Image (cartoon, rainbow, N blue to C red):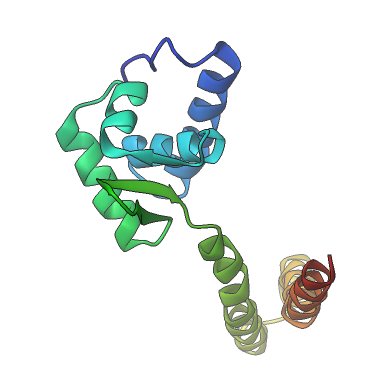
Length: 160
Protein backbone atom coordinates (compact mmCIF):
# COMPACT_ATOMS: atom_id res chain seq x y z
CA UNK A 1 0.00 0.00 0.00
CA UNK A 2 1.17 3.50 -0.73
CA UNK A 3 2.10 5.79 2.13
CA UNK A 4 -0.75 7.39 4.02
CA UNK A 5 -1.24 11.12 3.72
CA UNK A 6 1.25 13.31 5.49
CA UNK A 7 -1.68 15.09 7.18
CA UNK A 8 -1.89 12.14 9.59
CA UNK A 9 0.68 11.96 12.35
CA UNK A 10 2.85 8.88 12.76
CA UNK A 11 0.77 7.38 15.57
CA UNK A 12 -2.42 7.63 13.52
CA UNK A 13 -0.68 6.14 10.47
CA UNK A 14 0.59 3.23 12.56
CA UNK A 15 -2.88 2.69 14.01
CA UNK A 16 -4.49 2.61 10.55
CA UNK A 17 -1.90 0.05 9.45
CA UNK A 18 -2.36 -2.02 12.62
CA UNK A 19 -6.15 -2.11 12.23
CA UNK A 20 -5.67 -2.76 8.52
CA UNK A 21 -3.58 -5.85 9.19
CA UNK A 22 -6.09 -7.04 11.81
CA UNK A 23 -9.04 -6.78 9.42
CA UNK A 24 -7.06 -8.23 6.51
CA UNK A 25 -6.53 -11.31 8.67
CA UNK A 26 -10.33 -11.39 9.13
CA UNK A 27 -10.90 -11.43 5.38
CA UNK A 28 -11.12 -7.82 4.24
CA UNK A 29 -9.09 -6.51 1.34
CA UNK A 30 -6.10 -4.34 2.33
CA UNK A 31 -7.80 -1.11 1.24
CA UNK A 32 -11.13 -1.99 2.92
CA UNK A 33 -9.27 -2.85 6.10
CA UNK A 34 -7.46 0.49 6.09
CA UNK A 35 -10.67 2.39 5.41
CA UNK A 36 -12.12 0.84 8.57
CA UNK A 37 -8.92 1.64 10.44
CA UNK A 38 -9.04 5.26 9.41
CA UNK A 39 -12.77 5.70 10.05
CA UNK A 40 -12.27 4.49 13.63
CA UNK A 41 -10.00 7.46 14.35
CA UNK A 42 -11.36 10.00 11.85
CA UNK A 43 -12.50 13.35 13.18
CA UNK A 44 -15.19 14.01 12.39
CA UNK A 45 -16.18 10.35 12.58
CA UNK A 46 -17.63 10.48 9.07
CA UNK A 47 -15.60 11.11 5.92
CA UNK A 48 -16.42 11.76 2.27
CA UNK A 49 -15.23 9.67 -0.63
CA UNK A 50 -12.69 12.34 -1.60
CA UNK A 51 -11.42 12.73 1.95
CA UNK A 52 -10.76 8.99 2.06
CA UNK A 53 -8.91 8.95 -1.28
CA UNK A 54 -6.77 11.86 -0.12
CA UNK A 55 -5.89 10.63 3.33
CA UNK A 56 -5.31 6.99 2.35
CA UNK A 57 -3.50 7.96 -0.87
CA UNK A 58 -5.24 5.36 -3.05
CA UNK A 59 -7.12 5.56 -6.31
CA UNK A 60 -10.78 6.48 -6.63
CA UNK A 61 -11.49 3.01 -7.98
CA UNK A 62 -9.86 1.30 -5.03
CA UNK A 63 -11.78 3.45 -2.52
CA UNK A 64 -15.01 2.94 -4.45
CA UNK A 65 -14.59 -0.84 -4.39
CA UNK A 66 -13.66 -0.78 -0.71
CA UNK A 67 -16.65 1.38 0.24
CA UNK A 68 -19.08 -0.76 -1.75
CA UNK A 69 -17.74 -3.92 -0.12
CA UNK A 70 -17.84 -2.41 3.37
CA UNK A 71 -21.37 -1.09 2.84
CA UNK A 72 -22.52 -4.50 1.64
CA UNK A 73 -20.98 -6.19 4.69
CA UNK A 74 -22.41 -3.40 6.88
CA UNK A 75 -19.03 -2.55 8.40
CA UNK A 76 -19.76 1.06 7.49
CA UNK A 77 -22.82 3.12 6.76
CA UNK A 78 -23.54 6.12 4.61
CA UNK A 79 -24.79 9.41 6.04
CA UNK A 80 -25.91 12.61 4.34
CA UNK A 81 -26.56 16.13 5.58
CA UNK A 82 -29.24 18.58 4.50
CA UNK A 83 -27.88 21.01 1.93
CA UNK A 84 -24.78 18.89 1.23
CA UNK A 85 -24.83 16.67 -1.85
CA UNK A 86 -21.90 14.55 -0.68
CA UNK A 87 -22.25 11.17 0.93
CA UNK A 88 -20.20 10.50 4.01
CA UNK A 89 -19.12 7.18 5.46
CA UNK A 90 -18.73 6.13 9.06
CA UNK A 91 -18.12 2.94 11.01
CA UNK A 92 -21.30 1.03 11.76
CA UNK A 93 -20.75 0.12 15.42
CA UNK A 94 -24.06 -1.79 15.49
CA UNK A 95 -22.46 -4.37 13.21
CA UNK A 96 -19.86 -5.20 15.84
CA UNK A 97 -22.55 -5.67 18.50
CA UNK A 98 -24.61 -7.79 16.10
CA UNK A 99 -21.50 -9.83 15.31
CA UNK A 100 -21.23 -10.75 18.99
CA UNK A 101 -24.92 -11.55 19.17
CA UNK A 102 -24.66 -13.95 16.22
CA UNK A 103 -21.86 -15.81 17.99
CA UNK A 104 -24.49 -17.41 20.25
CA UNK A 105 -25.53 -19.77 17.51
CA UNK A 106 -21.94 -20.43 16.46
CA UNK A 107 -20.95 -21.56 19.94
CA UNK A 108 -24.02 -23.77 20.27
CA UNK A 109 -23.57 -25.33 16.84
CA UNK A 110 -19.88 -25.92 17.45
CA UNK A 111 -20.60 -27.46 20.86
CA UNK A 112 -23.06 -29.89 19.25
CA UNK A 113 -20.51 -30.81 16.59
CA UNK A 114 -17.90 -31.47 19.26
CA UNK A 115 -20.44 -33.61 21.16
CA UNK A 116 -21.00 -35.68 18.04
CA UNK A 117 -17.27 -35.93 17.31
CA UNK A 118 -16.68 -37.26 20.82
CA UNK A 119 -19.42 -39.87 20.32
CA UNK A 120 -17.79 -41.01 17.06
CA UNK A 121 -14.17 -41.02 18.25
CA UNK A 122 -12.65 -44.07 19.88
CA UNK A 123 -11.07 -43.84 23.34
CA UNK A 124 -7.60 -44.57 21.97
CA UNK A 125 -6.48 -40.93 21.99
CA UNK A 126 -7.69 -39.93 25.42
CA UNK A 127 -5.60 -36.76 25.66
CA UNK A 128 -6.96 -35.38 22.38
CA UNK A 129 -10.51 -36.40 23.30
CA UNK A 130 -10.03 -34.64 26.64
CA UNK A 131 -8.87 -31.48 24.83
CA UNK A 132 -11.94 -31.60 22.56
CA UNK A 133 -14.13 -31.99 25.64
CA UNK A 134 -12.49 -28.98 27.27
CA UNK A 135 -13.15 -26.82 24.22
CA UNK A 136 -16.72 -28.14 24.11
CA UNK A 137 -17.21 -27.04 27.73
CA UNK A 138 -15.73 -23.61 27.02
CA UNK A 139 -18.07 -23.13 24.06
CA UNK A 140 -20.94 -24.08 26.36
CA UNK A 141 -19.86 -21.35 28.77
CA UNK A 142 -19.70 -18.81 25.93
CA UNK A 143 -23.10 -19.93 24.66
CA UNK A 144 -24.62 -19.49 28.13
CA UNK A 145 -22.79 -16.38 29.36
CA UNK A 146 -22.41 -14.20 26.24
CA UNK A 147 -26.13 -13.36 26.06
CA UNK A 148 -26.07 -12.38 29.74
CA UNK A 149 -22.98 -10.23 29.30
CA UNK A 150 -24.47 -8.37 26.33
CA UNK A 151 -27.82 -7.97 28.06
CA UNK A 152 -26.16 -6.54 31.17
CA UNK A 153 -24.05 -4.22 29.04
CA UNK A 154 -27.10 -2.99 27.12
CA UNK A 155 -29.06 -2.46 30.33
CA UNK A 156 -26.18 -0.53 31.95
CA UNK A 157 -25.66 1.53 28.81
CA UNK A 158 -29.31 2.62 28.85
CA UNK A 159 -29.03 3.63 32.50
CA UNK A 160 -26.01 5.89 31.90
